[in-house]
Every structure is written in C-alpha cells, then in structure tokens.
Length: 561
Image (cartoon, rainbow, N blue to C red):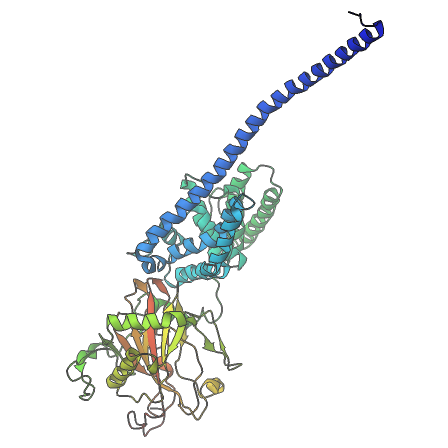
C-alpha cells in the first residue's frame, strides 16, 4: 500500500486542526446560550406572574360586576332608587371602566371583548349620567340638610340603605364640586374623604392628594388656620413639596394680617395652638337665597312653615260627584288639604293593574321633560325640572280612555279641551321647582295665546311632561295628578304660598284649580315637586283648559274672585 505524500499529510492535519477550532468556538457559544436559556426561563416565569396578576385583576373585576349585578337585580328598581347606589353604579362605568379596558387592550383575543364593550356602550351610563347623579346627590344634601357623613355611611334614609362609600368615592364627589367652583360642597366632601381615609384598610386614594385639595377648599371657605394645619400634615408626608412649602408662607402672611386687624380693632387674637371653628357657607343665587325657595326646601323636609288658617275645618268624606253613574256604586274617598283655595287628595282612584299598564305603554316613549322658554317660546330642558316624560292619547289604549272618563266623573269637568295624559318619571333626586301650571297674562302668555285661556285645573299621575298648548283651548284651569308609587323618602307636592304638603301615595290623585272664577291666574297655586330622596316616583298629569268648562265651572261675577 502506497504511503501518503508529506504534502497530503500536512493538508489533512491542518483540516483536522480547523475543525477542532470551530467545535471549540461553537461549544463556548452554546454554553453561554444555556445560561441565557436559564435566564429566559426566569423571564418567562416573571412574564407569566405579571400576566397572572393581570388576569387575577380581570377575574376580580368580573366577580365584582357579577356580585353587584346579582345583588341589584333582586329588586333593580328599588336598588337604583337609592341615590348612593346609583352613584356607585354609574361611577363604575364612567370613571372605573377605562381601567378594565386598559387591562385587556392589546392582549390576545381582546379585540372581541372590546367590540362587545363597544356594543354595550349605548346601554351603559356615560359621563353625562355621572355628572347628573353627582349633582342630584348634592341637591338632595342641600334640600334635606344632610351631612356628607350621613350620605357616605348610607344612613340618610330609615329604609333602603346603601353600602359605605370609600375615600375615593367621596373624593370624586368633592372633585366634581371643585370643577364647578362649588367650594361649599367641595370642602364638605374633602373633610369626609379624610375621615374615611383615616379608617380605610385598603387605601383607595393618596393622603397627600387629599390634604392638598382639602387645604385648598378650606382656604376658599375662609379657614386659613385649618388650611395651614392640613398643609403641615401634608409636609410630614412630602417634606420637600414646593407648592406645600409655598402655601405655608402664604398662610403665615394671611394669619399675620388677620391678627393685626383684630389687634387694631381692640379684639383678642386666638391662641396659635387652638384652631377656630370651621366655616363652610353655602353661596346661592338670588332666587335660591330668597324666601320662596327657603320655604320650598323647608316644606320638602316636612316642616310646618306656614300655618293653615282652616286646619280645624279640614275633613275627609265620600263623594259621588253629583250622583255620577260611574261613582254611585263606588264613591270616591276625598281628603281635604286646603279650603281656600281648594286642594284635595282623592284616594284609591287608580288600580295597580292600571298603573302597570300605563307604565308599560309610556316607558319606551319617555324623554327628558322640558319647559317653555318665555324668551323664545320654545321647549327646553332646565335644571329645575329633572324628570322624563311622555304623552298618551286616549285612543292609544282602553285604560287611558277609562282613566280620562274617571277623571271627568270625579272633577265634573269637560275633557274635550283637556291635554293628553302626561306621564312623568322622576330620576335620581328628581324635582320640579316652584312654578304655576297656568300661563300668566303678560309676556309669558306666548305659551297660552289669548284666544286659548289658561289651565283651569290639574290632575297629576306621577310620570313625565313637555309641550305647548294648541289654539282655542284657553288657559289651564285645573290640574289633576295621579301618584303611581309609594316613595320611600321625599317627593312631596308642596305649595309654597300656602304651606300645604301632599305626600305621593300610590293610587291617589291630587286636584286643584289654577284660575280664579274670573279666569285670572291664582298665584297662590305655585307648587313644586320635591326632590326624590329615595325611591321611585311616577305621576300622571291631566290638565284641563277653560274652553268647554263654561257650564261646568261658570265664571264669577266679581273681578279678581
């Protein structure tokens, strides 16, 4: 066998050397790769841990939504009729829902969920609902003189209580007031925020942030000493906060000026370690600080602010309204509330079945209630009327026609020129501030042209409103109101010039005349629907007009009577 040449041996030896070098280099890389593999395993576990934490939050949200829905749906109408329950529910889908979107956005299969959320959006509360329910809570707080603590603790009604509010829940109410420059409510709710925060186990908002806003609210309400006290507490948490340090200099200057003024007037200055009494004035517009509005709120609270001169003559009796065939076998129970002008409450004049039918018909038709704008003659929404309304014609349903016949039989008034039945559903804190049902005989007459006349009477089934009057009817001569619900708290019909208060009792109906016998409007009939503190309030209104009542309700012979 021939031996390989020296040159061939050299080539083979060199090739083996090269191969061994590449293997050595690859092994070094693989060794490092194994280390990265181990690190990658740790990274993956950390990623999975974070994902599990995220998914756990998603699961907790799902559990929270499910628990809340199951609790509320046991009696949904009663649940949301509590203003705090309504606030917490609306807040979930306005301020809290973005957190849910953030947890799932950009993740696998999230597109389908986000699309479902988009599809649900028209049926969920929005920012306007949130502002509305917050405004309602603050309105209820003022009208019924409730403390922030009573509302936050859920103890403002003897029944239908709500769960305690968190510090964040209180803060968001205060922050809404801050945005409206409503320092009175902002200060009250910031104090409550701090109070809840002091006992909160799972802290829902920063203490520093709370003290920051609280000191600002205190300053705006003239409580500089307290503002300094809370800012010093803030600096204990954030010693180098520039704004807090600057605020202390401002407060010191204000306190020095205050003390100098007191000394110049010969008054004693307070001890620096003793905080003066807190001030929290409620600033309102001219109307709300006036006598009528003060009487209105007092009546809503059930106070007897105006004596009834004929209270000893008031009585209850049965009537067949002149032996009307519809009433002979079932006389109507009448309870007098005022004699001159005459205001009565008819009891048991609408059945539960009829109420259910009317609600079912009107619910899909409900729209935000409006009022007539005297300046434009157009119908507009207004902050002083918070309800939703619908109008039902007699021919829409036999029940509506039956009610119209019954109203005519009870009142002995002609229905030919009466308005359609107006259904109103009062929302959270729903109200209708003091007003007259009839049109006045001057510039406001645009709502009731001279050839129409005024509303002669009103019958109200508690439910909703909005609409101008057609020609040739005359003014609203009377009002008849059906009450559809037993309201848990609030919701009285009150007469601010008389002091009369009518409770919304289910199945009953209030009745009064808006005009004097000579056809002039009777301003003593100014009335209001008080805010609903808790519960559901539906009413149905029937307004009668002058035309057609000439023989039913003859005009008086003497003017202004």
